[in-house]
Length: 356
Image (cartoon, rainbow, N blue to C red; front, side, top):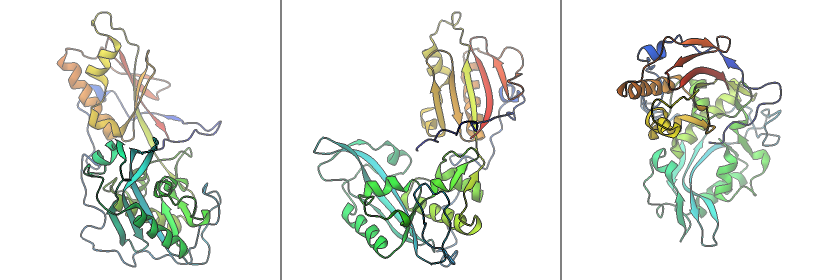
């Protein structure tokens, strides 16, 4: 994911009072049942409903009439077709010595939510896979990248849609078009990048799943090119019809915990040992948290969901208790009441939220 751009001067991230009263360490945190995706799985979008033909036709909606930055974008009166496009990519080492992104699956969905194309795409001949972790772990693809359509077949479909005057909709669609090799031939006014239309309170970018979950209050099966294209088209309908082509602000927080004030002389362990043994999240949780380590004092974790932070706190609590490490006293409100701090003797935790 491309992380959020810097907030403009004078309009940075604002800290909020963390809804924590100390019970986060003194009792087992309560993890809401509705999030996250891995806690509660939901059926794929459209399950049990069949195809949603005619579900949301565009009336009087036309091409985007400005640049990819999306400033001042508004629907026009002329009606044109729109198609959501999503690709999954891996990194490959080419024969010429260059490392590049290679498309390994593609999804194309029309305005009636019908999947026009969902297929595996063969990687370039004689290329060597450098990194395919994301598509294997999150996308669920098997590591056989020599099967599927040729990139030329996928490219031909996209070019035909563009020649017919269609609008291509995507989430960071510039990356998809570049990987497909059509970024130089698609007119700017036939592209809608929804990362420009759905932004956080402070104007930062967010994930596709975050925008969808906030707008529609339900989860979706993420990182399958076909399903992601469906989700993108639903958001496009919302932006065009409910939001009237205006920027949609997504109310999101980072749920943070900062470990600091390390005093490890009596414990006989280095800072690195303490992080690995007690404080680092599990490997399979790395996709839901952002780690920031200054290498000296502060080790900060930023979770996108409160439920993920609660689950992490419970994990750390058990690890510490197994090694006879317990909190000293009660949590203390700090930073003007914007968070709570707990002293564990050898280190301290600061729990707080920030508006994104």
